[in-house]
Length: 260
View 1 (cartoon, rainbow, N blue to C red):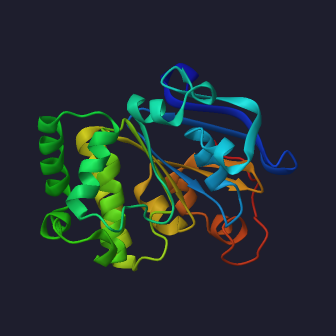
View 2: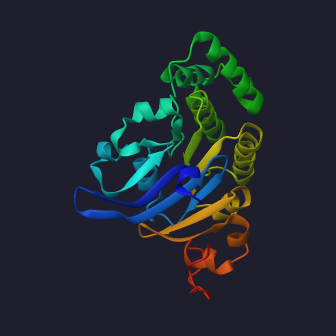
């Protein structure tokens, strides 16, 4: 893929925490418009650090990008504030179902629209769209988010992100702590948004089985390095990947670790 066709281009990204601990050591990611890209790897592989770098959130966590570049649709991410990135269409759903627990589901959605400066009429229209995708949220719209299920909180967090009208939706471990049937539902909805509305999606996941089922391509991180990239279907067929890189069984890979 040419760099100019990429909506997101990460090149040679190196990052540390407290100027000492190396978290990323040369990560490259190219995501095309309209693509679902999965970022896979065991816990501690560098997935969350990569996503925080994409939204320029590392400085708030005593992290720093020491070299490399990140461009989102021509914007130099490392010179752009997190709020400006959201308004430009790079919208992230952080790990742990971030919604305002003391607000209702609908108030959470409204807050997403206010964050990007939508008018009242735009917010009303966007809420209807979210409810069309997530009928469960319509049923729960008057409930306080803190009293809804984990799956409903995750849907609320995704719905709130959609209210910011993303062009690239970035999700950190959306499956964490959720029942498999709920996870399948969430990924089905994400793929529907991708196919019907052309939403580009980058999803970091430890659950490689579900991510590879719904993604177009995948990148596997190990110890802060992208060790493998390829078509999701091809990677799904390779048992050595699940066992070796994703920590499911300890067996050495039988074939070289570079596929394109």
